[in-house]
Length: 268
Image (cartoon, rainbow, N blue to C red; front, side, top):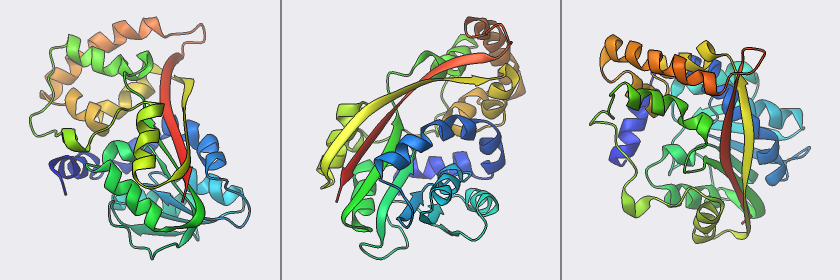
């Protein structure tokens, strides 16, 4: 594993429930488009890689697909098993998954390449386990970040918080542009054909306290930043956050947070 992979395991250890209540709801927005891109229908042998709290798995089952799922974090595996009883959900991590060659008609990974240190190797592994003619579809967060995605980072910066030294980034030689063209090029480099990529934009509507709950409880890299200086730092960032939320607050009191993701897909 790369240093980035090691820090990702540390970030997500034991945070499955907090993720499900907060950022998991955000990430579920792209699920229908992701499954469409993978041509998921009744009888499709589908693998949900990095299944998280199970939103992709549940939606795939709802379409009549024969779904299996895998995640590196035991808490996420347990969450998906609860959400989709009877589905085969295993522990496994990219770039080595516990499945034979050409096992699936379609493989999807919703915001998973954000969390691996060698994204190209991960895609090559997804190609390995997909049958010839099968489809692979993946999403990542687009950069630069949309205003809603950047909100908590802005608040942390205004509070004087800095990224913890142990929190690694993807090595430059393994990184790629988080754009439709950049993700599409990565799929092509992994050996996929008929590659297409596009941006998906939406406003995530949520309560201000609900949105804060994720990073405050340490979820994701942003949660580690918010908690980097202990309770005093969390409180300072919360004050900044409360003030900045006014930019996104609607008449109903909910926040409308603009987000942009990249969806790319291709054929084996």
